[in-house]
Image (cartoon, rainbow, N blue to C red):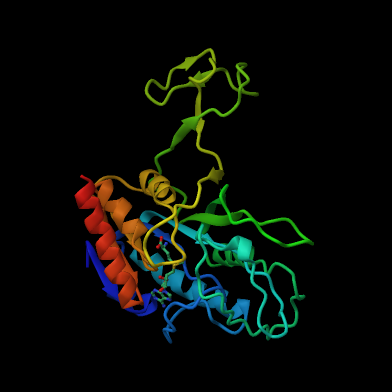
Length: 302
Ligand SMILES: C[S@@+](CC[C@H](N)C(=O)[O-])C[C@H]1O[C@@H](n2cnc3c(N)ncnc32)[C@H](O)[C@@H]1O
């Protein structure tokens, strides 16, 4: 199964993976009601209610628990959906679309059968999902805000433009493989940060008096990563920089990284770049072809 792209429904293909065989899972499942992936009858994200969608995700991630090593980590990227209808055609948050140039189908599949959520309200999918995962025994270690500085301008008049998505980091156990990542301090203030006795560089780890531009700190929970325009025909990709962060903190060279909703192959490409093994699952054959092209691109780059 390793270093292969598997065509099929992730909910079935995952049953072929061995217990405790994957170090890291990185994935962005189809969001609820937002896109049609080639009209495929088995695609996730078109359940009648947000509750059905979340239940489906929870069942799937229970399957992931079996294949994830005891010290493994799971990252899930999810965005919310505005609830309601627009003359029965659906109500889509265009500014929350993933791709810079949004050429998606624009079609909405939402039926809004659940009347307990008011029209125009955020559905609360990421937060409902996070709480349910905790209820199912996952340890939620971080809620990360992925802040995109290059979202499309929005014409909405009665709320603010959405420029973020959520990423949740879960572990199976209290102790797990995690490499702390460091980033440059963003502050112009040269005094020591509040509560610290000094600053450290990633190289030395030694404490020293803080100097502007030489300061490093742990990566924080708001990740400013711009959408990456791609020449490929897939409308819901996440940027390589995002996958890079997750792969570097959650795995070592030689480890196995799984993406069960592989899309255009971002996770596989970054895994190969950093000498990890990958397992990719994708429902739509056409996207598997894209994935292969993207991995080939990498070999041309090197
Ligand atoms: C949000 S996209 C993933 C994008 C990916 N992170 C990337 O960077 O390209 C979700 C993908 O899940 C696929 N998908 C939908 N339902 C699926 C299922 N039941 N099993 C496997 N893949 C599925 C879709 O075809 C789509 O490519």
